[in-house]
Length: 91
Image 1 (cartoon, helix red, strand yellow):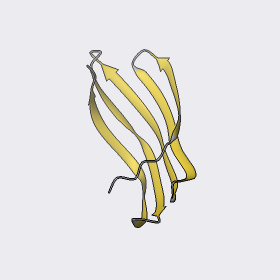
Image 2 (cartoon, rainbow, N blue to C red):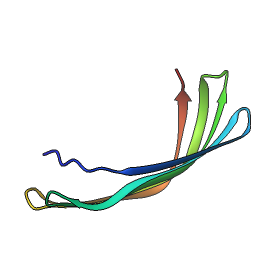
Image 3 (tube, rainbow, N blue to C red):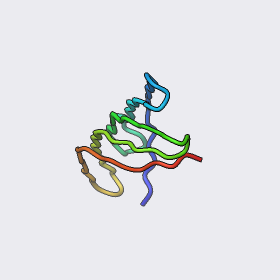
């Protein structure tokens, strides 16, 4: 089933050098809507380096926590934390 819930988001990006970006982002909510209680947090700190304008490398740390309880559908609890790395292509 689909259980909609609103979230708030804040993002900060710093570009200390032309090829280096530092990004911090957090989103989440703690609310009860139509019999559904949701408590969620998704946060990451990421360093990006793009070369040739469109190709890059990025890495950082991310934490995610979700607690959702619905009168109609039951309870879901999920979380993960840890580092990540990747390749990026911008269009």
